[in-house]
Image (cartoon, rainbow, N blue to C red; front, side):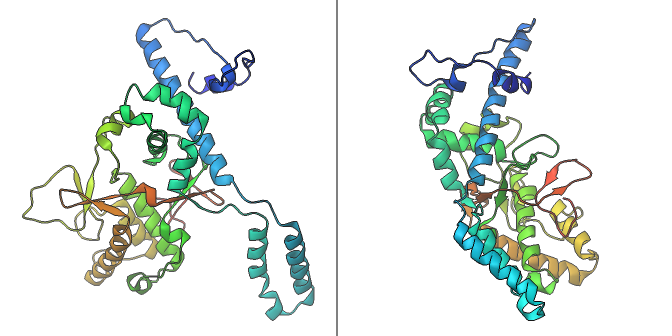
Amino acid sequence: MSQLAPAVIGRLTPNTSSNEPLPFDGRQLITFTDARQGTARHAANIQVASERSYIRSFLYHFVQERPLPDQERLGEIQARIERLRASGDPVLMSMIPELEAQRRAASGEAKPKSWKAMVARLADQETVASFLKDVWQPREESFGEAKRLAEFLLYREIMRRPVKANSAETLGLVQLLMPQDVGETSLPHAASKLGLGLGDWRDLLRLLLTHFVRTNVILDFPARQWMRWIDRRQSQISVQRRRDRNAPSSKFVRFWPGPYGKSPTRVVRLLLQGLALDIRDRAVQDEVEELFDAAWTAFLRHMTATQDGGYRFRLSDLYVAPLENAFWCPITRRIVDTTFRGLSP
């Protein structure tokens, strides 16, 4: 019913008699179930599903925003491209890719937008600032602030990437980008030693973000107030670079991935498979360890220190962008925005 309700209510007649704005323009839908427990569960599920559907719609439209195309500039670039192609000169034709990039920019290409800008835009929406605030403020006093509520709603949707369930990411509505994807980034020496290019390095950072940091909820946010509304079974974790053998173990601490140990993490295994490396080779272990040291340094500038000596990543440092090209995972049958050399994580 939570999937059917939005489609059904969208076909109902809006309430035009009210002088005040109403959720969904005043459309109303009554549902029925013959069990009290089912009714309670059904009511909660419909509310959550409607909120998440709204957030997914917002995310898609937000990242798709782009400036109007410059038609005059487009015409000039297209004319130059046609002249270069007609010349048949290989030297002149080598300039075409650069002109095509200029054409994409002039056509109003959607650019990555910061997490903070996304939160501010969502907080300004009447649905959040008025309707949803009335729903959530009695549950959690801090949600009386629109920006706080907006960030919570975004965290609930994209805090983790589910393996098989639907989310804004698995539906291909949005893509999360590291700051290294947006700004100028140099290739670490450890990456070049293993034959990685700049694209491989950026893919590795995104894979670490998705399949280690976010999967383990190594995130800096008010978990005590938010997690009971997101997932009570999940705990907030901190990460440390290396294990201290003298320190007591804790289920709330993870250690940064590396080649050592009996069971390397998913990202390490993916790297080894993509580069066809033998983990039993001591020299390979040292080079991979150096690579993940460089990745740790890249992440550290976007992390907040915790009292237990660990760190947590700030999602507020990320960017969002439309997903232009993606992969189809044959195992989970879901859209994957990042692979490592064509290998699905």
